Image 1 (cartoon, rainbow over the protein chains, first blue to last red):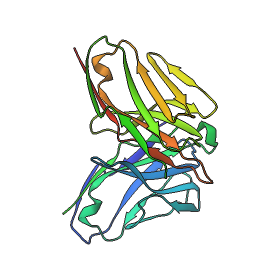
Image 2 (image 1 turned 60 degrees about the vertical axis):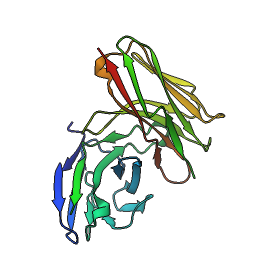
Image 3 (image 1 turned 90 degrees about the horizontal axis):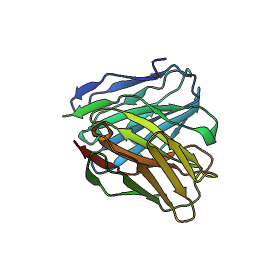
Length: 114
Length: 113
C-alpha cells in the first residue's frame, strides 16, 4: 500500500491564483482530513470528510473548499490564494470506527503564496 | 474549547538516557489520545494511540500513559538513541458528533551521541 499520498510536494503561487492540492489514500479509509501546520501554531484542522459525498468544516476553513466524490480522493482547493495561506498542508486518513482511529498522514505540501 | 499543551517545547539529552515528554489537555471528555512523531520536512507518524478507557500503551521502548481525570498524558522513551531525534506531538479526539483532533505544538527532542 502507498498509504496517503499528496501532490505536489512544493508549490509557489502568486496572490489571487487558485490551485488544488491533491490527496489520495489506498487503505479504504472512510475518514479524511486536511490540516495546516504553521510555526508556533501547531496543526489546525481545515476540512474533513466522514465518507464519500460528506464534508464539513474544521477550525480554519475560510479560503478553502473541499469535495469527496470517491472514497480514495480528497482534494483541497484554494480559490484565491493569499499570503496568509503560506503553510505546510497535511492530508490524513483513518478508519471509520472511532475508538480505533489511528490517523495516517501524508508527507505534506509546502505552499508559499507571494 | 479543548486546548493541548506540551512541555517542554524542546529537550536535549545524551544518548542512553530515559526521558519523559508531557502533554496536558483542558477538557477531560476525550475519546482517545494519540502520540505522533514528525521528522524534519516530513509528515506525522503515529506512535501510540490510547483509548479513553485505557491507562497506558506500550510499543518497544515507548510507553504512553493517560490520566483523563487530571488531563495529562506522558510519553516515556527508554534508552534514547540519536534516531529518536524528532518532534513529538500529542493530539486528542475532542469527542462530539464528529471526529476531530486537537494537536499540541510539540516537543523537539534531540538525542546527542
